[in-house]
Length: 462
Image 1 (tube, helix red, strand yellow):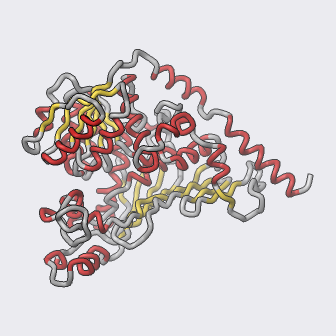
Image 2 (tube, rainbow, N blue to C red):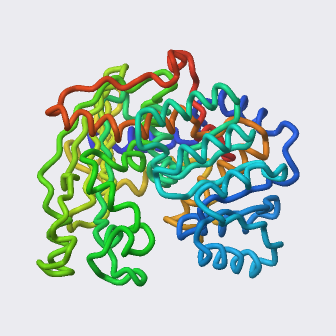
Image 3 (spheres, one colour):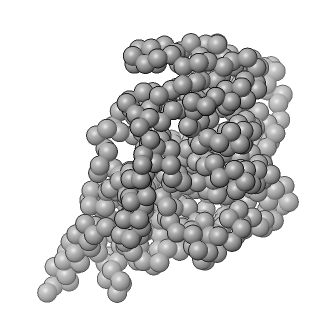
């Protein structure tokens, strides 16, 4: 057999192995649990029905087995727009709660709510999730779940006292390519994992500022601004760290079995100087605009390195103040190969170090591997998901929450994930403030990570 023929044979053999299911015992166990006495109807409530909240509402309206019983928002406009959506879908209008910041507390007293979707400003995530769990209902909380380290512990402690589940609604965990990579990692295609790269590299300047009247271009934020600019930008004034780690870190945590046989150990972070937001204000509002005098604390690029208990390293990049195309910068690397998101390329060797790619030391397109290693969730539900937000991933993340409630089981992304992934944010702030000093990452599982088994993406349901 010639070298070229041998490489082709090895590559074909490797690709054909994708038909073999990964973690079959866990597939069967989880599937059996999921089929135990499902609820006929899942009754959902929503706290926060702005743009993001209404996106979740729209997904819930596609399901005949979901009833929306209550909504809560301090904005009359958001309530009206949500009711209009629900009425157009031919559904009964839910009871609306809008009298003040604590209106959700009254809503949670209802006995016709099984789960609550929380899509509010970050500082409200934990108070609302904790109240939801204390009310005996499933909490589905948007990202990032927590702002402070104490809040991560509050989520965990509340769950352990109430046994009411909390799921972080991290939609990127369901991205089609990263789920194919998860499939490949579990089948050993990358050998032993050693390194992962991820982040949130997204020009958010037109999200952090607007004209105060809508989403028009402008230099306003805070009380004079609209939508996210009314609250999100203040975090860039007050904080210097990775403010939004979970989009990148969630998928990587699944690849590396974080909280389930592996654990974050410590991190170190550093930040560049802060220039991008000030420049944007001057460019859009002029040098004399009041916001041109604001001192934005957030560095333009924040870099965090995380060490894991099993010896892997994770690099996380936060870059939201710079002109740049969107990227989460994923990279999966092990002893037998590497995949990179930005160029959608892959290079693999077999277990003996022989190249599986057509040429040694040469990238090949990931498309063929994507097709062969497509995750069962996507194979089963791709057509249904195609019209959902963010390329279909919004369908999957809300489905995971709803199916967990329906089957009365733990969600596939749980409270320990919410706590650990979100904690990277305050811990990165601490590291930067202390001159990039290494900071220990708490074990939110209190040792259970050593025996916990993977729970995410084990079948075509969750």
